[in-house]
Length: 117
Image (cartoon, rainbow, N blue to C red; front, side, top):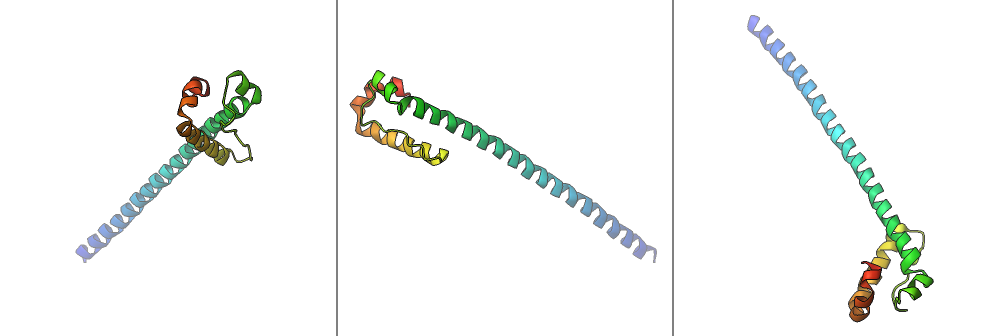
């Protein structure tokens, strides 16, 4: 009888301790998920800020007619098209510029300091 009572107490303590440990694990997992989520938001905000900065450069310089004339940017150099989608517009312009650079190596050499790509 005494052994049965001791066994029941041991089982109860095991269950109680396991339950507490399980709660800690869940809390750590939840904390990690929350931390990861916050860092992702910060990273996304940083990326958005960098994209906005690139967009401003593209609009104010590389797609600005006066800037292009003053700096002898060739007419066939791509122009940034602002369709309201910061990510895709910037991505498409980056692709167009890289293609232009590959296809116009001599012209690129002349203006690479200006466009700073």
